[in-house]
Length: 99
Image (cartoon, rainbow, N blue to C red; front, side, top):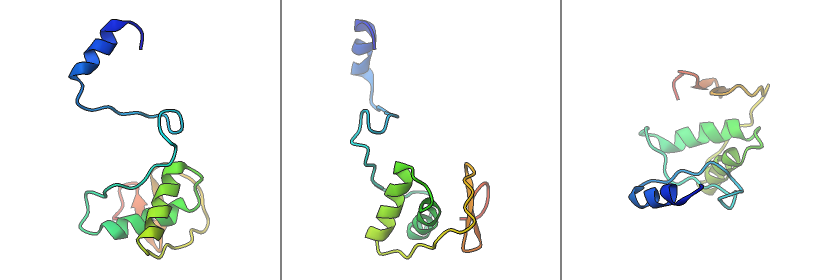
């Protein structure tokens, strides 16, 4: 930010979003809450199963949380990273499928 105007405008802010993992944060995200499903552990298990093959810090956080909850994650096979979709145990995850 440059100048007093943007800094003064922050007084009215009620939400802040930062998108620089490792720059503004510790670089170790954690799962806080899973919304949008009556079966949050199922959603977490499927996401963590997919993210075992990813090196992304958010994927690592999902895998760590699944392990912390004692969930059994499946080993992905034939891994091809495609943004927004995947298949775990025959279930399409993302890309408009049922999760």
